[in-house]
Image (cartoon, rainbow, N blue to C red):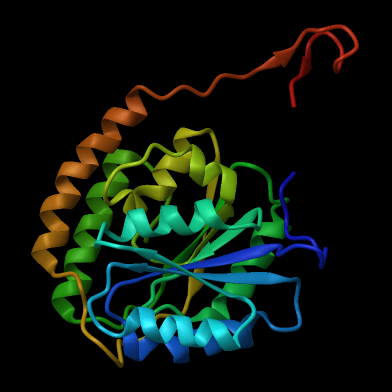
Length: 260
């Protein structure tokens, strides 16, 4: 069973934040993450700079000199949000991961609630707790396009997740590393968890307007790649397998007992 422990020898939770040209949001968001997690189990904050062309990397390095929990990784060239998340998860020392977007619209104060739900449900190797932005703080066009996309995706993938685009999620590190890797995979993480035979539960979270910097995504560039990726994930689902394994070796759990 994989859960959040109080062991102080190693971080119990890694907060992974992918960023690209987010100089103005770095210090405020890191302060909020530390405030949300301070006083609890040991944690690490992993920022992945995805080929920024502004002062993001320099500011992150300055902050890391002052903040012991902060680790900074860099992509020499921009590889996309999914690649940045994968880099951060792979580098994490903690067994449990929390992700959030680096633009400040996700509220770090919600992380403890998602972690608490994860523990309440028993943790485990195949459990994801996904944030549900009950009240979106975006433009009408963005909200409408998201509602349509979520409806189509949910109907085709049956991923039991009303808001898969929310960056706030908590899940076991190893399960993520078992996902098939492809560009934009972060938008389909609930479906990929179900493909492994896991569970996905949604928890309402706060959503905030972007106060600093500019969005890296538009309605149209999300739409077209989303359609292509949707059919790709459907293909993966049809070819996935969820075997139920039984240990039959004498002395290793007993004949007919479930393998662990």
